[in-house]
Image (cartoon, rainbow, N blue to C red):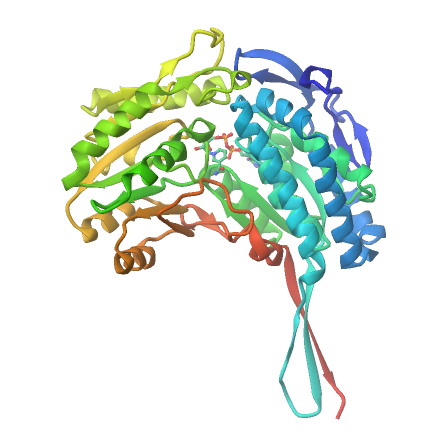
Length: 484
Ligand code: NAD
């Protein structure tokens, strides 16, 4: 099915496609040309109320009564349905987010893999028994939270939907999702497929709309028992504050300023393409983008020359053209990246190399060609803030201690990479770096369904992905039996 043939997007509440109670809609823009191509329901607290009520009924009804094996089978069937519709979903993701089609295809594969992984894991999650007083048996059950809220960003709509909702449903929760207003068409389509896979109505509800309206209503809703949020630190704070008033636990994934440390003994043939991809992938709009490269001074000039050549050869254009880099998500994001970069250049930071804008890129698209920067002071905004654009800042270091200090010298701590053949140094650095994931001689910006993922410091707290993500969607109920 081509993306243009998609149905009018709607909310999904209690298994039914519904418009917003307000009757209003929001425009959805194609980032490749800036044109409106469909509209979304502009939901508010009334729609969120209805979705939470439907989820509560499902949790106390058929979904709550389903065995772990039955839940797993539904998710496995959903994974298969996603793969059956793989190309149509990838085309839709490409148009909605602007990302190159090959990236969109990889994202849909990853989304299916989340449901496959959590489908398989559903009946392998169990509690434990605990030795206690004589004549007693104590069981710690792993139970679902109940109704979970999911606030999803626009950068990886399908993937983040899969990792968050996949884990929550496998654990037995019923979900209410507020996808991002900028890109949410694939999660809506996949939620409809979940019904086809046998998910009971109400177990998964979708409420579209603005963050400050539908998102804020979900975060503050007293009927929610857990919230999973991925997005900006400021919004994460607002979500956590709203949830705190209801004493609701929150998982926050808030982005990063991830360093790639390149020692002089690194295998450069292996490292350079990975370094480049880590910042160009998804036009740098990746929470785990490798946005800082720290290079040992002995090889600094050589590496910068090689990186500059690779940057200059990159092509930016519409996602469907399948080039190296697509547009940014919207005009606001483009203006933000441009302003930060222009501010940096005015402060004396040097633009070393710039990618090309392909001639087929339409004039109204939100394009920012990948850029390599040198001479960035470590305390500059470009070194400290998440740009969320394809901009790589390079820094030189002389010692391992200096590299670690630079790596840890931002408010963030999401992911990092260390490139060296020295085994002891690999482990010393991995222990010293403040990050939720450290890669040695490889890097997976956003990848790794099986790898626990989440931040330290301002990158957030809690873990998603992997079995750890499944545990996050449960709580412990202890049953202590005295039997003599
Ligand atoms: P955002 O954090 O505002 O939006 C993320 C999600 O939160 C969206 O679904 C949005 O509708 C929702 N939201 C917004 N305000 C809300 C509120 N008050 N209550 C509840 N939900 C709310 O991000 P943005 O404004 O789209 O992007 C701004 C910056 O955030 C980017 O430049 C980037 O640095 C960062 N970001 C990070 C990630 C990530 O993966 N970590 C994803 C998106 C954006």
